[in-house]
Image 1 (cartoon, rainbow, N blue to C red):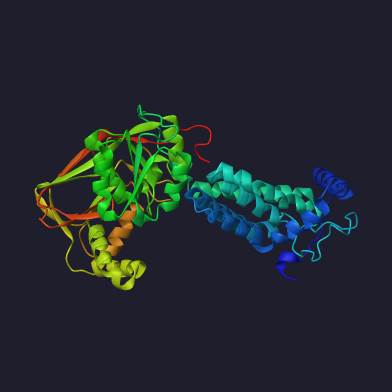
Image 2: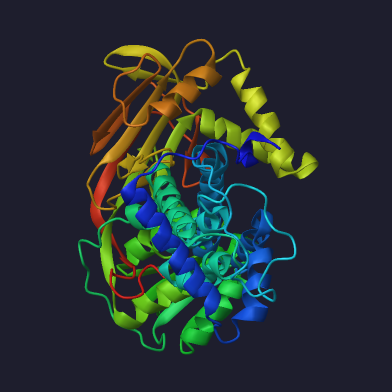
Length: 500
C-alpha cells in the first residue's frame, strides 16, 4: 500500500463531539442508501464514473470553448484552473491528513455500486472538490455558463448515492473546491472585477431594429459570423463588408448618411473608425472582430449580443481619446502609443512573417531587436539626451490585480499612463523588470507617471512609432495629449444580463 491508502494508523481515542458527528454522518449515509431517487440508479453511477481523472470536466471545458465566445473560453479556462488547484490540494494535503476508511457498502443496493471501488482514503471527496471547483470557477466568470454546468456538478451527490463517500466527505470536498475557485479569482481577477465604471453617461439614439446604423466590417479580420449575428438581431442596419485597403473610404461614405457609425474589426480598424466618428460628431458602435480587441473588451462589448443590447436600449458613454503630433503627422489612439522596442519588433515581424509565418517571425524579431547594439530610441529629457529602450503611453491608467496583466479601470480618467524603460545593458532583463514592476514609479530600469500631456524633444525623424497596433514614423519632436471625453461610444450598462 502507498502512504495515501494506508489505513492502519491507530484509531484515535474517544471524543464525544467527534464520535457524535461520525454517528450522525453514518445515519445520513444509511438514510440515503435506503432511499431510491427516481431515475437515479442508472444515471448517477455513470455520472460518477465519467468524472474519474477529470474527464467529465475537460469535456465540459471543451464544449464551452467550442462556443467560440471570449466569455465562454475564459469561463472554461477558469474552471480548469480552479479544478487543478483543488486537485493539487486534495492530493497533497487532504487525503494525507485525515485517513478515513471508505463506507461499508452493505446498506447500498448492488445496482448502485461502482464496478471498480476506489482505494484511496475517504476524506475529503476529490470528485466533489473537482465538481465544485469547476462549476464555481465557471460561474465566477460567467453566471449564465455557471448555471448551464451546475446540473453536471451533481456528480458530488452521486458519490454518496453510490456508497463511496460519507456526506461529510462530500461537503468538505465541495467547500475546498469552492475555496480553490475563489483563490484562483484572487490571483487572476475576472473581467467583471476589471470592468470600468459606466460613466460619464452619454445621450445616444436607441435603435431597436438598427435603423440608422451603418456597420463597416473589415473582412480580413474574419468577422462574417459576428456580422451575421448582428444582422439577425438588427435587420434594419446597413452592413458594408470590405477589404482592409477600402476600410477608411467606406467609413467616410458611411459617416455621410449614418446616425450611428459602426465598425467591426481589430484595434487598427476601430482606430480608423474613431477618427472618422470624431470628425463627423457621430456616436461609435464597436463590434470586436480582431485578435486582441482591447478597446471593445474594455468597454464590456465582447460579441454581437452585448452591442445589440446597447444599441436597442440607447446605452452609451463618453471616453477619452489620446492624440499624437510629430511635425505634420497627426493621429489618435484609443489604447496605446509606443516608441522604441515594440515598434521595432512589429516592423521586424512584418518583414519576416510572409516568409516563415507569424509565430516564428515574432520570435526571430525579438531576438534580432534585443541583440542589437543600438538603442532604438533617444530623446531629450530635462535637457539631457538619454537612450531609451521603450516609451509606452496608455490612453487611461493601466492597473494590475493579482498576477493578471494590466487593464484600464476607467476609460475617462483624463490621464496618459506613461511608462519608460531606460537605456543600458541587457535590454531583455530591463524590459522584463519593467513588466514585473507594474505600477511602481521608481526603478533603476523603469519609470512611470500619469500626465495629461507629454512633449519629447530630440526624437530623430524617421523613428518608428506604433499606435493601436499601426506603424508610422516620426517627423521630429513629439507631443502626446489627452482629449477628455471626446468620443461617444455604445456600451451595455450594468444591469441584468450585463455579464452573462
